[in-house]
Length: 465
Image (tube, rainbow, N blue to C red; front, side, top):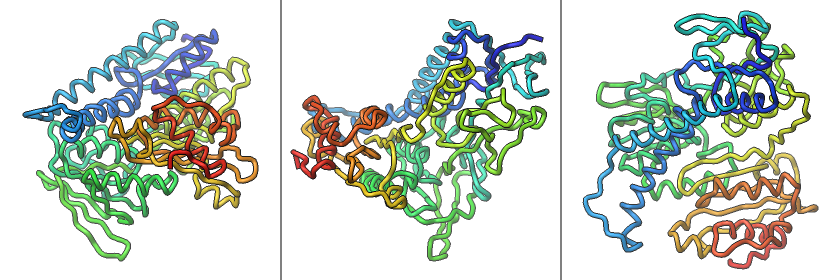
């Protein structure tokens, strides 16, 4: 039986990045993946394919609605969903192949098969042939899978999860989306841009309920202009597939029943940790009430040489969070002293305009009783935004009332996914709002809105409003 310094179970962003860092640090490393391609949910049926379809659908939407204003005349415009899916598949294939290349380059031994614990150091890998390997250290990186509640069980035909939504063979005439979170709004946007009527059913009073309240309020207005319909504070009782349509029954806040019909129903109520078949008990481990593997601040489980990272442990289910944890564990095993500031892991929604946030929300600061200043700047006031016809949204900076240290940054803006990193960098070095306000930003750029919001937070003196 071959012995490795580190055995990683799961090849998603957390797992494969952790394996890479382990190999770079001179550790003999093995990676186990049950599917035929590497990359996990993110690369195969999550982050990468959804962004591919979001980009394709955004191009179509702009051609249909905005090209004429730019002096571009388009006739006979048609959405070819099959080609969009084919391009998405090619993007996925190239990205997964890139991960395989990195494994080979770094001499990481890859096992295709289902890995499970035999004991605290031994992993059995079931494939065409069953083998066992041993790990001095083991990293659990098995990720998550789509969640659902009683009454909304997916049949993967018309009651679907994000996985099926990425490979539909037709553009729905109407799609119901259960859940006003990131996944539901991103995939809902794809099909709304292609012509589907999209209705969102959300239990909370607003969409994106975990983000700053101003974000949800502003984005609701934007999506309504694009044709979205929202049913807030509605509890889904059940969804039924009648063959050619789905029928959803919900209860509103008054206790009245509401019935909605559509071609498809996308269940997007979050994800849950995936540990099935791991045999955790054989290693002396168990999951908590949420199905997660418990870890300490060093991401160690109850068994010291076994670590867990990413969606399978506490915290935000984000690919970049998993990557950071993967590197953290690798460096810790190698005897280094890494750190992760969980407060500075950005959250991003890849709709258009994009949404991004880092740090604390106004609601969190109020609940903590912390005195703060808020500065906001509307995107429509930017020359660059008018030039590109991307004028929706705002950037808001929250700073400590006394020290001016930046506590949170929240934005709906073109390229917010990239803009947010200026805020993350500033906050990592505990910059003040005045620090950003005094930095020269290129003109005309979208990033000028960050400077203006910082000016507004510093002394209520934004220049261009």
